[in-house]
Each structure stands twice: as C-alpha cells, then as structure tokens.
Amino acid sequence: MSLMRLLFVNYEFPPVGGGAAYASTATARELVAMGHQIDFLTAATSGGQSDEEIDGVHVLRVRCHRRSVHDIGLLGALSFVAFAAPRLRALVKHNRYDAIHYYFGLPTGLLSLVPGAHRRLPYIISLRGSDVPGYTANLRQYHRLMMPFTRRIWRGAHRVIANSQNLQRLAAASLPGLRIDVILNGAAVPEPTGVEPQTRSGGRILTVSRLIERKGLDTLIRALACSRDRTLSLDIAGEGPEGPALHRLATSCAVADRVRFHGFVDRAQLASLYAHADLFALVSRAESCSMAMLEAMTAGLPIVATKVGGNVELIQQQVNGLLVESENVAALENALSTLAADPERRRRFGIANREQVALRHGWRSVAQRYEAVFKEMARTPAALATAARLGMLQRRGVDP
Image: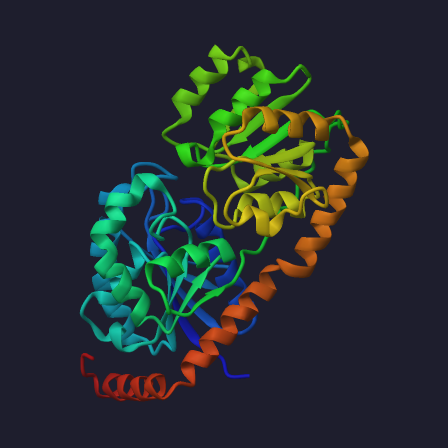
C-alpha cells in the first residue's frame, strides 16, 4: 500500500466549532492509524496557540478572531484565510504533500485561490452545510455575493464531497453537471468516566447543539411546555448566541425547572449525558448530517428528529426513531411523549441505531472512503507531474 502525506485545512478543530471539527479530526486520526502522514492546518484558540501532535496528527495553528467557541462570524472566517495563507504556502514549500483536503468550500476553500505552489496540488472540498447556497436563509445574500468564488473553488477541486444526499442535491442546484460524491459522517461516543446511568424513567430528553436559530431549540422548549407529562425534562448541551433568548423562553413557558442548560461540555461530560438520557431530539430547521445524532445513535438512544436534510437518511420512521415536520410543535410533543411512555419501543429503536452505526458509520470506513479518493488523485498525470516538479524544486532549494 502506498502511503501518502496529506494536508487537512479546517478553521475548526475540537473543541472549537461544530460537527465538522470532530469529523475532520476523526478522519485524520484514522488515516494516521492506517499509516498515512497528516498535517492539519487550523485556527488557534485561547489556551491552544502552539503547534502540537495529537494522536499522530500534526496540528498547525494560525491566528483567528472568533466571536465564541461555536461562532466564528464573517470577519473571523476571513481572518483565518488571511493568516492561514502564508502558513499554507510555507508548508507546501517545505513538505511534499500528495493532496490537500479543504473542509468547507467557504471560507476554507478560498485558500485554493490564493497564489502559491499549493495551487498546483490536487485538492478535495468537503461540503458541510452552511457553505452550500440555499442551506440557510440568513446566508442568502452572502452566497449570492460569493457565488463566482464558490464555482471556481468547486470546479477546481479533484472531487467535491457532501456529507449527505440532501446536501448533494442542494449543491448540485448551484453548479449543475458537476460531480458531487457523498460520504456520510461517522460516529464515536467517548467512554463514560465511572458515572453510572440513573434508573431510566423514560422522560429525560437530550439535545446536543449549537444554540442558533437553525437548530430549532425554541420549538423543543415549546413542545415540552405543551406536554401533559410533567415528568418530561430536557438537557441542552451547547452554547451560542440564542442562549439568552432560550433561557427567557423556558421561563415564560413555565418549564425553566425542567430545562437544564449545560453550556459547552467536554467529551467526558457529554458521555455522561448520553448515558443518563432516555431519548435524543434533533429539531433542526435545516441539517446536513448531524454528528450529535450519530453519537446518540451509537449510544443506543432512540431518536426524535425533524424531517429535514440528512435526518431522513439516518432515521427511518418507526424503525429507529420518529420523524416530525419542522416547526410542528404539536407533532413534536406527541412524538416525545409517545416515545417517553413506551420503554419497549425505545429499547427497539436503540438497538437498531447501534446496529446501523456499526454497519455504516464507523470512522474507519469513512477514512477508507476518503483514502480511495486521495489515492485516485495521486495517480492522475497532473498530480504526478506536479509532485515531481515540486520535489525537484525543493531539492534545489528553489521557492516553488
């Protein structure tokens, strides 16, 4: 087997960011375990400014201005591109990479357009959701402005990869005729740290999410308030700009005593939340392929989810969960109450979820699919010629 040296680029890296941070890191870690060498260019965070090696992955950090752990903002995204560009050029100058993997077409993929030797290397783009036009309404103007760049980035890629079939279809509408592959996310749940689960009553609902409007957490709180079952409670893990409004909503709906806002939680705390939960809810208004839901499935939790995006690719009605229409508070309340009151159905759904993840969503199988793409890229005549030219220039000490 020919081993490769790959450069991953993502402005998110755990604990900063959302699902893409954990997906890119897990894929890189698996590729290292398979024998490949991975450098990971990402944004620095408070308390994590230095380069380091994590599980065999060489993590290389540059400055970046973020609003918060889960919110980078437009200026923050552009700052990452500005600070990452010279580091990217230096890395390619001194290392012989086989390919570059950009997570997010925007903003990360903009680096593929910046002048430098890295533009001669083949690259892939992993689409994650917010970087696809039409995914969220509040980014409509931004994507309209950036469409010429989006098309150049996607067309220049050796392969564009979406993390769900729904996202693939949405992306195809922006660039008809372009090949877009699908590689779903994987899942892994950290081991609990000696905390034994409580006796399950059926009524403890868990959601893990950034507190943003797209995640629909307001409908989840309203559904809890509408339920006649006063034993239902809700754990919300995550932080974001909608936090204060959600706290006020829980108070105004008279359920503040049954809604626990945990804020940002580390992996050990998250494992404990999964272990204590009776069911998992994901009520997004738009979703690509939820890492949190995959982790809940791995933990053996039954699922209640909205019938949007990649959710319908993971959840089959009455097989491993219940699907409801987005914004339908009454239907959501009925699904939550029904599942909470039916321990046998929860057990059956949980078993089905564990089996599905084991068969289809292990991180090793995800990494193997990416590995096949990288090897295909390395065999193309253009990639071989570029690698030979860069290697020759590097040996001569010439700046590519």
